[in-house]
Image (tube, rainbow over all chains, first blue to last red; front, side, top):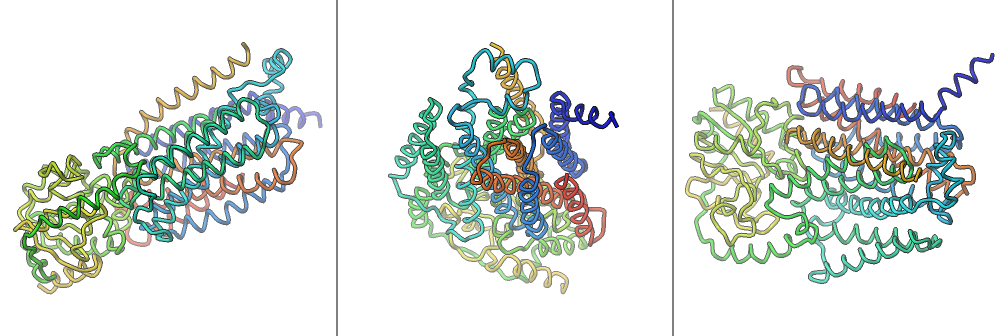
Length: 498
Length: 120
């Protein structure tokens, strides 16, 4: 009978809990390493999930942990919402799902900072650190010696609150736009937008600094959360649909960094490491996406593209009086059937039309005829990083047929037919040839190098930026107007009838 | 002095984690960027721990408790949903040799895995 208490005290000792946290973050890192290739990725994700389980158990072992009923309630609610959402979401809706999950994470960060303030704001400081480590010798000494609590805890906590709130609202707006609850086009106050954003940022920072300096007003804290919320709205609302890959990555980085800040405030190594890794991941992706669009991150956040691009695009439309050659499904089928090598260039239009399975059927039909087929995927095709790859993987397209831009571009010269499905700006030669174009300098898929091009598109409407695509006026290009899914299915039907 | 050492230790962890993050994430190919995002998404659901820790405070009023229930629910959605959806996606990437129908099985596996974790 004397054994259980001993075992319990060992399990609940600070060192043991700390070791569990170390195990947890080691598992996170190992899990993410698995993502460097498709074969180890599933296992990697599960390793990270186990790490999360370890971290949760470690936290629940904390002496003094209580309110078990409420904890169970929160977790049950989370499972009740999260599991069905994750299981039922369509692959085409993945960007908004990721935005939503990102948003709730940011919301959790902001709420936690708020509760922390409610309970410790009067002596803003590391109560939790003290509590967590109260049996460790050194923090006990620290309390005795300093009496007051360190400012850095307040700094990290306020940072977490502001960034978490921005991320929550920004992600929800991104979700709304992707889900088409809110119009996807930029909604902005025009030139005043940047001033408004700046004022909001300054207000949030001023409130934060006041709180750190010792203002004990909960109203001020709530005000800071609201201002940050407005800022999140103000930053994301003016951003157009095609900039979404950058925005989602950026918000992902934000939530990660705010989680790391929470970890600093709560003195929790698992939170610090996990949050920081997510911050790093989001930053890398943001940077990659921005580079792939040849745009700076500040210019996207400032929301300059959607509005400015339309104006310049309108001018471009006036200039272009070339002829557009349209084709039929049967002609396209013949053209594809006699090709040796076909490259398919998917874009957001494929996702909207849910055409990935039809595209896969077409590929099978072509392969049966001995045509070599591969897919060229631009980094920003779709609405989030890697969006096209997920859709094509869903349709069972082999991983090695998916070519990244740098590998795909040299291949176009020996390609007979490039089949562009719902992609626009990422194929526009103006990015290479027309210095006055707003997208000049953006890396593109050089489909115009191939011998002929078929573009499947709903209409001649220019893409999100309103930029006319020179590719469509190229003599070797033929346009097949229609919904991506039905157009591709028609081609497949014509092919099998040949 | 001693408190500073807690801070500096944590700062060291923060900075090192940043570097490790950059190295590890740089190795992820473009093709896997969507699962990477949803996976890292799940990982930042770890803020759940913050909510759990705060529940251990003795003097919480009911408003704080209500807020924390929301925070814990949000964190759980983030974790469970994130890992599940990532699992679903990644199964598609590896499912090439399998015939049709493999997708359903994999989603089922993912569910049981995540449930076990969240229930813990």
